[in-house]
Image (tube, rainbow, N blue to C red; front, side, top):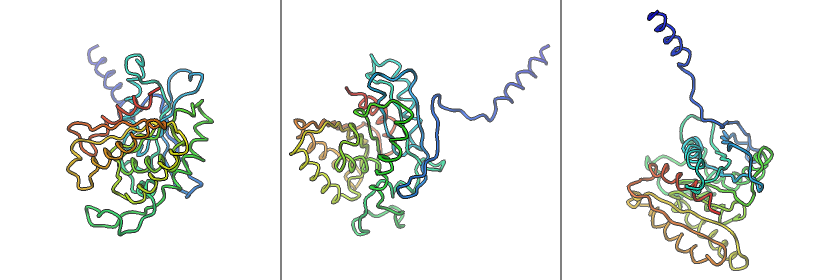
Amino acid sequence: MARKKIEQAAMMVKDTAGREVTIPRTEQRVMHSRAGNREYRIFVAKPDGEPPPSGFPVIYLLDANAVFGTMVEAMRVQACRPEKTGVFPAVIVGIGYPTEMPFAPARFYDFTLPVSAAELPSRPDGTAWPELGGAEVFLKFIEEELKPEIECEFKIDSERQTLFGHSLGGLFALHVLFTKPTAFRTYIAGSPSIHWNKRLLLEAEQQFVSRLERETLNVEILLAVGELEKSHKSRINDNAKELAERLSAFADRGVYVEFKEFEGEGHVSVLPALISRAVRFASRR
């Protein structure tokens, strides 16, 4: 009898061995953009239960290969007790690439504007940067192809849409804020690479400020960095903090800004802490 039980246990182990672990209520699909004819791996996390009358909030997440799972789990555990955490269920849409690596070279094209080689920072290994300059095409894909597909599947609250990006993704989030601020209500830019093409971003910021002089907007912005990034020669922390201070001057024009420096965290290690803060920030009412 004992041997039979051992054999049964061994069969159970063999039956479950090698099966992939999946995150509940998530799926992924491939989309080919009409704008630029590029291929994306789209990750979607579906909230449990029925949507509120106004629809679900939605978070559009860049570099999804690296951080989709982290954000989904942060949302899942915190949204269980919204009365305690302030986090409410939301659809999470991750935009990634057809690779198993956390970061794909294709992000350089999608997150950047065209800029001359002379204005680019030097690459640490001395090699040339990948293809650049596709931010406008990438934004067109999000606005004209990805958003409509998501809105066909879910009842979405168009007034509660968030864009999350980190590093070059944070730079892209700021570009969208300055050039098309009504595309999202909430912008989360982690360790934004403002130094990457600072001249163009400053020009876009001035256009944004000019718009604020004519009309009131309703946008919320979280700028966040890791404490250990202070030593980076690109001045990531100073650039983000100075931008937050400049934008804070427009609180009476519907611009709400927070700046957060995470103690003891670097450029990459900041991501889990930032994501936990981000799901709360995106749930602000």
